[in-house]
Image (cartoon, rainbow, N blue to C red):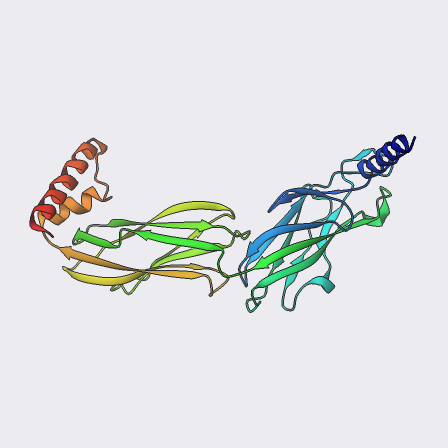
Length: 279
């Protein structure tokens, strides 16, 4: 009899939970939370922004699905750390998407933000629902790499440097890629490295005069000066057929495309010569 009562009580409790209103978080991580639930969103750099998205669909007390039950998603200002700002999602957006921006001087650590889903004027008899979102603030949210770091090139011949950005954080803020210290070169590229993704971007450089050029490939966040890396590059530019071959083989595109098979041969000739002469 006691066992039967325990099972019956558990069934009632589970039934109550199944009929409770909930918030379906869709980004930057996913999870279904009930009132006062807690979720870890991930890591973000100081000064960066990130978005929290959630479905407007939920259930009411009788278990019926309400497609637009939540009308907006917001952060409680009283829960925001000093210097942080939040922008609520537009009314009746589905999925709802709100924005949070951290302060540039935020110390490393885990912060808890209260996020509230609102049923405006309680039209669907849902009231509000509040969850706790944990955010880890750290400068170590992005890994960078660049290659090659030693280049032989013909003068006036563009060569491509590959920059890889591995964004392990939850921000989609843009990054700038630039060659710093190359004479008369001040061009930067802006790229979007989406959160939890790894991408490789091609950055072409060249010089018009022979010589040895030491410069830095830099990758930096557009919103946080603390998130950046720099890679020293040495480029040797010579006006010679051998270096023209090397440059072509390493990424310079010639036209027409029927010349493509010759690129590999040019690079092979250059590499064999360098190996034999220890260049």
